[in-house]
Length: 103
Image 1 (cartoon, rainbow, N blue to C red):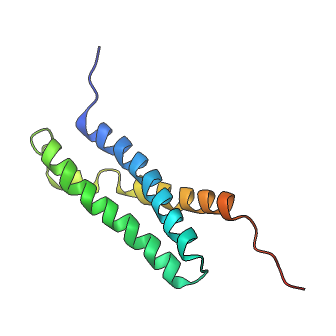
Image 2 (image 1 turned 120 degrees about the vertical axis):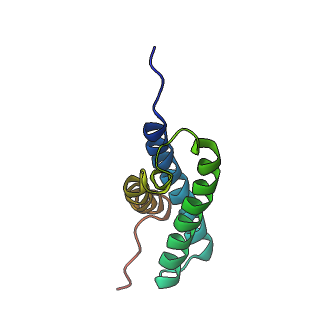
Image 3 (image 1 turned 60 degrees about the vertical axis):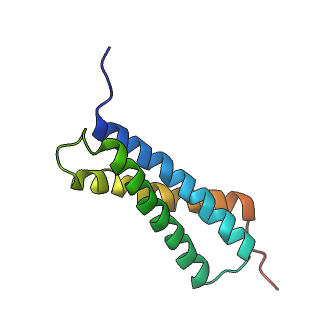
């Protein structure tokens, strides 16, 4: 039975954390109930904060298992932000629904 390589585990953790960041961003957007740039900036701030917090937690766990320490920061960063934006739009659209157009 083979064990999962640390970089593969980091990749999948970042994917899951992207979904978590999207859920938190959606909750924040629904609570503010505005459609403005502030909502988007708050979502980006949440995504960056979760990524940085996860970096320090994962760095402590994977520091001895990864050759290059910079890989802990960069591994899965693309899938993290792609997953975050896709799931944020998806979850928000499902929960908020279409915006009624005034006639």
